[in-house]
Image (cartoon, rainbow over the protein chains, first blue to last red):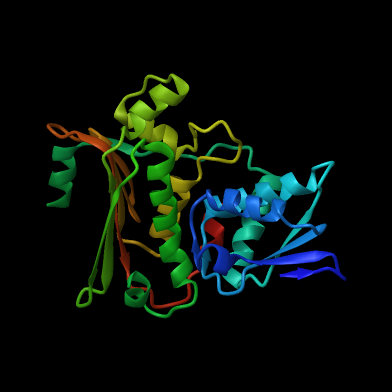
Length: 122
Length: 162
């Protein structure tokens, strides 16, 4: 939906993709759609989106940065009408992107063989 | 169907979808196969849901060898994945399996998470984590199975998705 007076286009993500978004590939579909708009601002409308994965959220944040860092055909991309869970997913991934954790995650499992595990289970 | 069976609890949909989405995405991003399998079974008397996600792809060790020229055993390859060592060159990758395990075991207070690749298995429960050597067994690809109890209270996955 295009609003020329306000120089913005709204893309309904649920109608274009699906109510559940899990794949990184969604970014390329949206990229093609955004490229075709003739306004400086594009609103990605998350009405009726029930879930978005971490991977898809990350790819959409990268897409937003890509359009906003362009020197020609630059576009401001915003996310609107996200439910609480989706908004929180964007907040967490964006925060991690802005300020990544420096320490590696700890992983120190006990090493055993299957027969020992089965004995423990019995 | 899965969402219906786990009930209408705040945050449950997000928590149940999160590991399914991340783990299935991994099949298409890493296994070099274009198909995988997902099984789900809800046990109404026991009030838990079992989910199993399987692929017959190249597995963890071969993926590290082909993508990063790392020669690792199956156990070492699982360890690297759990430490977030992604085979992708992009930054901020390698979160999917670890955060899914955290959502299952901590946010959903799950009864267990098992990951098998080749001849090694990671068995993770609330009591701890074990890396198990599987004698006389080899799975070409990856098997992930986990059990989650039917949610009874609101669930917040945000502390676990990093």
